Amino acid sequence: MNLQGERRIPASVEQTWTALNDPETLKACITGCESLEQTGDNEYLAVLGLKIGPVNAKFKGKLQLTDIVPQESYRINFEGQGGVAGFGKGHAEVKLSPEGEATLLKYDAQAQVGGKIAQIGSRLVASAAAKVSDSFFKAFETKMAGLSS
Image 1 (cartoon, one colour):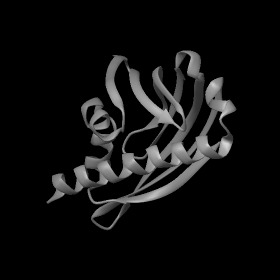
Image 2 (cartoon, helix red, strand yellow):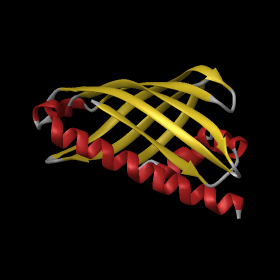
Image 3 (cartoon, helix red, strand yellow):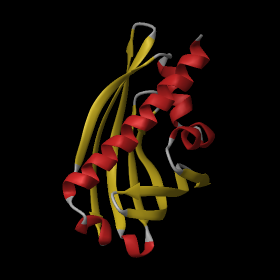
């Protein structure tokens, strides 16, 4: 599964970068995120409750940031287990660039799922992933608009 897109964030690159690296900001913006704890340098442990079609699951996973170019880009590597619901793993490339007083955020994510989740159909899984992504960016944009006003 591939998700890609770009968003205009109503804040400076510096503010956007800081928020993208703040666990509390991310936790507040990720739908279903129950916890997001930093466990080491650029490493996090996350717990998410998600509903994908008829499947409700709690995923526990690890996130690691690599290929970090401060205030420009990084790669997020992720893997999570949802018990009988299955698993997910993949990575996302995130790039920031100034656009006037705002920031252009581009992302390109690749993910794989397995187990019960994979059995419900790739279209449904892709739709759920797109919904979670869209929800995150709407919440993130709203939060960043509040910081810059």
